[in-house]
Image (cartoon, rainbow, N blue to C red; front, top):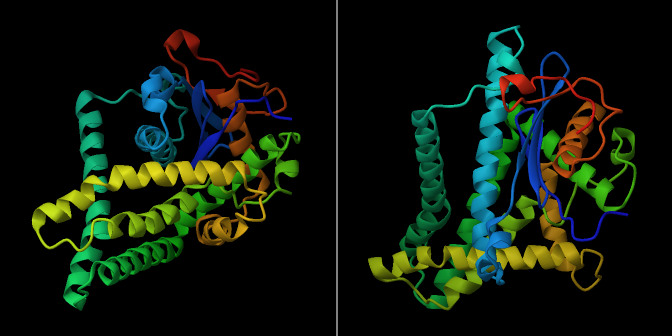
Length: 323
């Protein structure tokens, strides 16, 4: 069985998977030459460092920001490897990805901030404007229509990106991430063939979390009534961290009580939605997810061939079989 207290979180990236444990995070990416390139970094959550921020509701906001930052770093890392393999047949310089300049990091930060603001505009502000245009008057009807439009936008967005070929590959790795985590949580052998037998639908998935956010926002905004002024609209945006915090607690609870018959009707919609955002992975994709999982936990990897760890310095360059 898994070690008590360990909870794994993951995210699919370009041709790879990012995994996070309580002490480390890792990114494993399948290269064109068939090897698996792995980055491992120590990581301690902000809410573990400062107990005051580990309070329910409050901790959700910090965890989500950390997840966003690590996710963007993982996507950038995997994208750099994919770009290198596309443009060169040579090995990565010193078996490591070049460090980005301060300007590249600044541009990355601006891109993340812009994407976040754009997401708020599309999924929160545009539905509000459309609801006003439709003429909803009472606070109840306004927030129900607003919430329905927000949910429709979200489902439409998922449906559109599912049609993209490259995104389908990411969704296959997403399925591999879920299967490997299920394998670990059930104490089964961390092997691709074993992981293949587990479900690709996980109750703690980010897809389920976003669905919960959409639903929780309806109830939270109902307490605020109909926003008639600019300040009232901005107040709704200020409540988004609260919505995220509540949603985080709900998905933690649903993950811990996933087998409860009482909670199944509330958990199932998120699992159904994962039919869009996860696809069945092959054994090679499952191996990448398992390598990422083992790397984050510091487990033995002697059975995996062609695993290369990113060197921290030039002197550290090596191909290793264990961590």
